Figure (cartoon, rainbow, N blue to C red):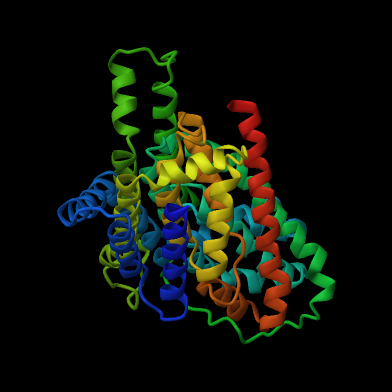
Length: 441
């Protein structure tokens, strides 16, 4: 019980530091690691070694991948590639299904692009589409926001799922495949809520809430825009198939090539080169260094991820994980535990990425005692954490304010429309994760 009290107290402290006192999550997580170590009686040298090794081991497996993912996102955002994807999807689906088109657009775009950036970039298209199709802007806004949100928490190379994969030593290719399976109904749940709540929002379109900015002289082609996203995902997925025990690609040269280029680092590195080709579409006012901007965005996430790894490593050293695992194993709570922890953290402090990283650090030592140490179970644990990390987005979440301000919602409308949508998304997400667990575990 003392171990449980220590962990609970430290989690509450992290929440207070990040919410009330606005301490950066990187600092908060390192403070948490130090406190857990001291309170659990770890010797000082061992504690410092645990923090540095946990930080380093996490980043050596995930740091480069996060950097590449954010670079791809920066090029898609600033080149107009994200908007090209949206317009193409809309053309395929049709104006009569414009809400579905924006939901699917968000689902695709948010794989490499942060959901808040994606929403800002696509807001102009949302406004234009509302006028052309006659679809309520409220429905389109919720459809886009929830589509973006689904892949943000479920599908690498988004930093949150990547960091969780590193913390749990889970197969990224398997997470991508299962994440897409879980993400589709989760995105559609948000779309459905938008349609159901539309008439109760008393929403009036504000024609001035989007500042339309021309980013490029000409728009990238669809094939130029989609390759940086889809090619790395295909390569990583092929590697997972090649590594399957039955060796479907054999064990000769072809299989070795697939395994090499399908490694997440190499696959995303290839994606970076295709993304860099989008630079030629920049106009005279948009010539800033997109690669540097991507690396700056990656730096913050990398530091938070490393601090989460340090925290998790200290938890392993203190054996708190085994204590908690033994406690909860009697209840057969399984995948619900990471979901509940992530949901509490998300609701309390606002950031989905911080919630995912912190929960993964807490859950990593529990995998064996919870019976979640197989490859499939680890992947599902990452998805359970992701489902919790979207439950719920409200006034302490920057994404909540991006959605409300760029959609013309007041706070009440955003809470009824978007916040409740994320609640239903989280519930649908964990339900499908549990269904998958019955099928594959």
